[in-house]
Length: 456
Image (tube, rainbow, N blue to C red; front, side, top):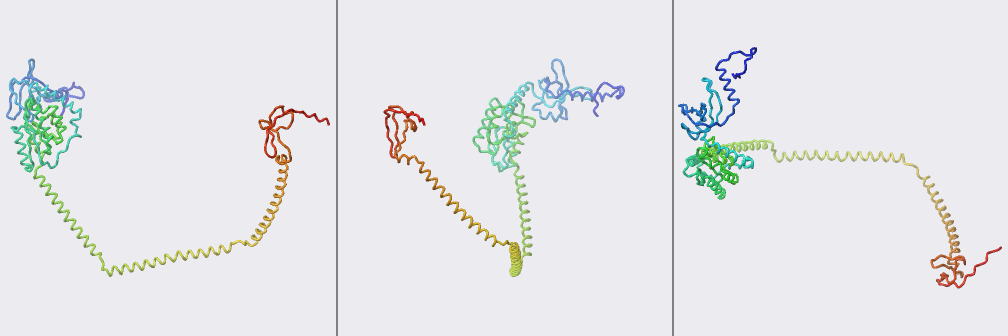
């Protein structure tokens, strides 16, 4: 039952609550309003109980607070603190209700100073994530049947023995290639990256394991290198990381194609047990055998059914002959019936035509008479028009200027071609053109005599 502490309401709530309810309400308020946070201090009064829980006091120069780290969390710590150790704990503020003591419920512990490393880890992680280096879309799938597995780790590491033991037990047929490299120290990051690049360049393995046993954050810091992360991301061979314990995360884990919580788990992910493949193969074989038997049985049943339907050749021929006769009869009937209907229709139309055919003899006689009269009128009209045309031609010939010229007359025109009709239009010394019946000539006017007006 959750009971939140608040000012008592004299009408709806009791004025008195129990100590247990008070402590429980305070514990809920602390856990709800103070988030999970990192607290630094010095270890004092450290005790490891038989249950595996850690009890200690975290203090500084001015204050102290009780703390507890339960076994489920303490087993993942990479060291056991001692009196006087400077540490940083990730804890939730709570209240131990039976005693009314407020305490820290610790989920993780690290040595003091690791906070700076963690901040650098977060900055690099955010940078590479923004570049898309951790994008799930670029992750490469693992091969279902790897024949060769590469391992990048230290030859002296216990993790290597665990990996080899796991692979020998699960997949003894798989070939293993070791790319030795130190996994701890100042130059370890560069050497690990070089080993990964060597494995990528040789292209002699189907999947690559990058492994190391557990340790502190400083011990695993070589796997938080930017160059190593980019080398893993651009490696053409799928990479599985198994670094530290289940709670340990490094930049290499995010850049890899798959992260395993431990080196042993990485080996298990890389190679499916041979027994599983054999079991699947056997199951597939049994499925194929059952399918084949079912198919054969179905075909046998189908064969029996077809055999029952199969007739003797003579019976088949007799049946086909009977069908042929039936079809021939239907063909004759279907061919004769349309012809009979067409003939009946033709006779009907002939009778209709004979009944309604008009009498055209009188019309032909009238038509011949009109044609004769039309031809006669055309001949008369043509003769009349021909006579009229001859008369017009005669008149035109009389009015032809050329005939006038042939009778000895001439036409005078000036230099512009205008015909002259009066002596008033002439000037002495003017040059005129004379047109005769045959040819033309230019003349010069010597003098001009005006004719006297007619007094009659």
